Length: 393
Image (cartoon, rainbow, N blue to C red; front, side, top):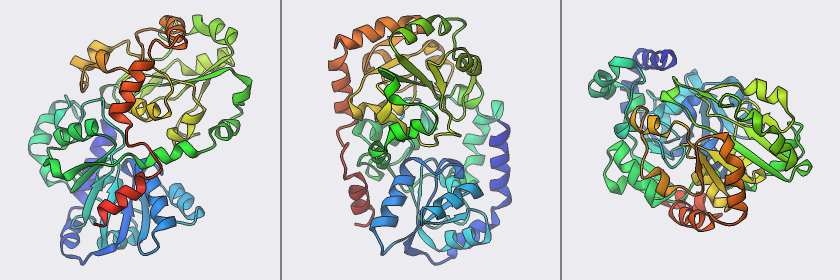
């Protein structure tokens, strides 16, 4: 809640810059990119940025961030980057005609970008309800008042001009969440699927993990609770500890990677207890999609990661110990969780061996195929090209 209020205060302080942004002449060949409130160089905008940088010389592509290290990283790749609220970042934002983000205009410069086209590439097909559809308590009792009145004057909360998504299912959910006319939400696939071409085994090797040492690698990737205010007992008491023998016997490695806003409990003790469990946090591997080609089975709960991973046609297990609470007291879920699942749905780690056996028998092959046909039909090597043709039409 504190970080959210700080961001709101920053938006209010910079409001006078909006007036300049509204009247400043825009250059339609200057495109600005950003992600995750300016704190990451990853996700859909990152891959489209690289595509434009390398393949569309007539456009000037600039990455904006709030992190000096990310600015240095982009420049080291041969790209152009600036701090969003530096003098250079402000001047670039005042001139740019197009802004591409994963969350909102807070990914770039929310104030100086006012007057340019705002394109939201999103950060995943939503399973968790968000925007107008979510049950929100992010700033406590003030949330309803803020959403009804104050939100309208903050440039970082303005609705995008267009939202580009991965599937028809995602399109319908985004139309509802943003409250946009249907013609302003289009499905082309996700640029971040380009990450599947990465050498994931080499990525793990840099972390001291050799994929060839194991018969299988499982990734447990839980999402946030209570909009970042909740916590998750990863070990579920002693349930995961009791599986160490099973993991070792089957030569399986369990990787743990939580959402950037999830407070996970018990991970350090698990990692100390066995070489069969390792953590791969965002601080070590910022782009989870680049890791997915090395993963044999994904275990998640309400994360949109399942929609991306399905493109690889590999098994998915959903572990939802708090399903009822998430549906009725957290933000809520789109669709029918149990019916729509791509694989077995379990509640506890103790159920994992049975789910593993069922997957090996092929009992969930049909569900996975149906899931892929709904969410991954646009998966190919031409996503960035389709998006660029659309945006430049």
